[in-house]
Length: 282
Image (tube, one colour):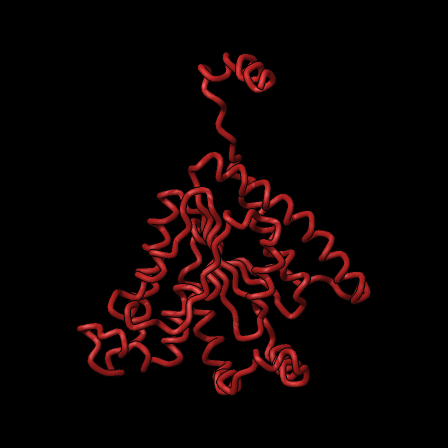
């Protein structure tokens, strides 16, 4: 059963390409200011944290989205983690450990650029990676059945349920880029000298596994999108629109929590005029 929300494409037929870009940028600018204010108030209230999870195929625009969506938020109010290949230290713990210790504290927004879902995505496409985790019950690739990954997704659901119960607002975004657009973006990295550093031959190897990844994404979207941690599928071929859609969903979600700044204690309120006088007399 499909639980995730698929966000619709912008109707390009009614607007020129430039109009679409300008419209998306204008809306994003407004959303950024709202997000900044919401985070400031959330920090003052001190009851909630926000976890933003970003997943997508290579070149789907995760890095630039983080830069554009959160640029107005106080630098101390947003923390970004990009999870790469697990280190030796991380492999000496269970697969969720490195994600758990990176969670945002109350009042802050945490962004996982690639997330704990890599553990049911990359490791499912490349099951040999699981062997590096030294799990007692996994002695060979033959032990990695569908049951293994279903169990791991159930564990992730419990992990997120616990976070939500304790005050973390979770929003998960799959930046859904088309295979044709990915090809165009990879070619751009090769054509533009200043973008060459972003290219890796490994990108082409992973591209050959496109259908495998799409299957795994569909599985995790359907099995791990919950009311307390929903997935949103964002059309990502048009970067400005994708950025606005993500920002808008975050803002509209946070508004529902009606964050409130704490009031000054009555014993201090009654002395406000006295405090003013003391400062004025300096």
